[in-house]
Image (cartoon, rainbow, N blue to C red; front, side, top):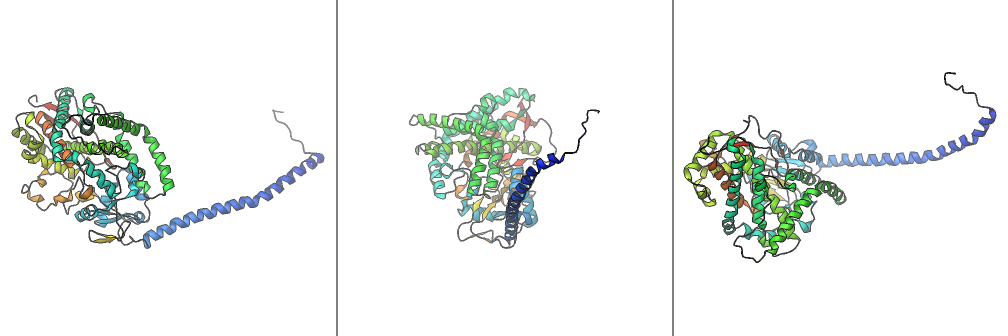
Length: 526
């Protein structure tokens, strides 16, 4: 009734027939119960062992570790997870600066790592030839490491020696025509696409295209076409994302074993394969073309020529490195300098007057003349490199056997150490109004507010045997580009900016910098 079936009680015969099955089931359950309990006990024991391991490690790092006497937040001293967290968030330099404000010039930022924020640390760590921390470059095999990340001092000296000619003063003079050619192309493109100051242009992108094309031409005699087509190559467009992943790898690799490191490498690199492969292949093609031209008459000194004579895997790995290292940091410095000037109209006005009163035509704006005749431009660039250092993270080194004295502190061997540029350049002990943009601090006798500034506390190209070989080239690019831009255009921000430019920015190995949209009105048309 109503679609329901009435259940009738089972007969004695049916109950009797089902009894053996029930008995068998009970026997099976009774036999498996000890096994279940055994597995449960094993799992509980493993869990207890893991918990005990972490607790004991926590206690050791806090109470018995060789670095136990150095200050820092409790959880940072106990585990490296907080360092990894901030690296992945892209705010590690800011977090370290806050720690220095709270704890002083030396802070323990992970169980085996110290961060320093004073000028002596630069000398003690980088001038005294401490080796790079392998954990930071664990994702790259030793045999393919390049000048930027090779950890073996002998290997590094070999590479540096073979590349020195491409960065010499003679080479730079021979390379000037390339810089002028590309800066002129930039000016022409901005004039055409800016439509008399009516169409905003993103100088972050234009500076990126400029520096990548210059680096390609100086390295291999071929460019990427960014300036000409106002478009990034595929791999250039994903550069920032690549840096984020590489930073994540660097942050994690110091705390895992070789097997885990291999697994993480595969996971991380799988997401980079398309863009990295495109960049690597394009670089190899350019390198091959340059090697095919080897011996042909050309009075230009290409940066890569010293390595072409080696003719092995080191040529390719360093060619890939050159494009990245020679482009990203210089474009960052150009972007920051222009933005800082636009945010300080009085300083932009002074620089504009200096440039336009010194030169009467573009051709007179050269590498030499911008160095000799534009002191305020040099001050603006130096201040920008302090205010917004292109390489913002601490460069990790390892204390050698026997320990070392750093900034007056004895540091045990095997400790990871770094002087954090962002922290030092924001330290009021070294710079008055450290968060402000003041080119005057670089002009002796210009402003008494800055008479006690220690300018050596801002080493944007690092110091010691691993300092940047491309410093003179980068400075020449910046001088030429900014001087010719200001000579040709009245530059204004498309939208006035009122706030903290650093707020919300991510800083990994390099900055994930925002757009800088400007209107460029040709001089005489405003």
